[in-house]
Structure formats: structure tokens, C-alpha cells
Length: 258
Image (cartoon, rainbow, N blue to C red; front, side):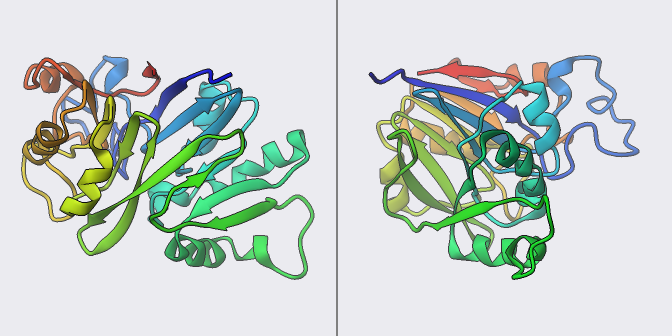
């Protein structure tokens, strides 16, 4: 029986997180817990299986904070360090669940993982290293363990190809600056959309608020949430005051049920 989707926002911040090291701005010193943002990631729960999109530097703490006891797979959007750096910590799940961790990623991410975590793929394996099963994906639909189908969506992060993912009527997009009309068609019909919106000012490789709202207006989800929030954007409350009634600011720990 289909149990529906549950999405947990594990991190809603940029590559530096919020607060930023050594910064005393009003956002970084805010007392509102919603202004504390770990690196961007989500947990997707479906039919008693858990899947994570991106495992950045905060992955270990994100798993502990969300009390994740079982994890079936990690999907990667792209190879930047704020999205892959925590992969080593999947070995805790290897040990507990006595199975490889399924990894779903593009060829470019696969190459980066072999470079950054070379010891995992060495012929002479050191005891206790992560055990991975790499599944290379492109832009065609694939199926996760437990039967959840996933539609990859290509977005451009300046000149880098990044994958967004659509799970049923939910779509997650991070680190996008442009999306082709062909890929936008894959998003249409989405009930809930999470999309990056770095700040008010334009940026070379990320949507700003205006660009994110333009995408939301084009695909018309029932609800949309902004993620990958910079401390330069503002506090949770100040950003909320700028938004249409169906658009919200994501925050760490947000749970969405579909």
C-alpha cells in the first residue's frame, strides 16, 4: 500500500551555512532557530524507506538531529563539496543494516566520488570504510528500492549540469541558475516545489528571489518553498514578508506530507 511521501528539510542553507563563520550580521546573530541553516539536503520517506538527497559536510549531524535509524540510498545533485563531503558517514548505516549504501548520481559525480573518496574504491580496502553501490543515472526515470520512481531534471549551475529530482508530485531543485523549457515541462503538475533562492541580488550561478518566483509562477505548484538561503538574503521573518501567499521559506526541520 502506498504510504505517501514525507519530506524533511535537513538543511536549507548555502555552502557556508548560516551562521557564517566569523560573521556578526543580524542574520548570523539571530535568536530565531529558523535562521540556523545547515547545508542543503532533504530526507525523502516513502513506504518505510528513507532516502537522502545530498550528503554534505553536515550529514552526520543531520542524521542525528532527524533521528534517522535507517537509510536506503543517497541521491546526489552534483559534485560540489557542500553536497558530497559527508559521504564517509554512511558507514554507520553499512554497519547497522549490513548492506551497501545505494548511491544514485551522474557520471561527473561518480568521477568526483572516486577522486574525493579514493580509499573507498581501492583494491586494498581498509577495514571500516564505507561500502557503496554506485548507480549511474542520466535524465530518464529510475526506481528506488521500495518502488519510488524518480524523474531527474537537469538544471544549470552557471555552466555545470545539476540534477533536480521529482518524486511523484514533489520536486526538489537546488543550485539552479537556468532551466531549459524542455526540463521545465518535467516539473509541471508538481504539487509542492522546493527551489533555491540565494538572495535578492543577482548571482552568477544561483536563482535570486525574482528568478525563483518566476519559475514558481511558470510551473504553478500549489505550494513552493525557498531553500539554499544565504545570510545576505535576510532573516526567516523578513523573507517571509516578501513572498506571495503560496510561497514559504524552508527551514531546517520542516516536514512536508504529500
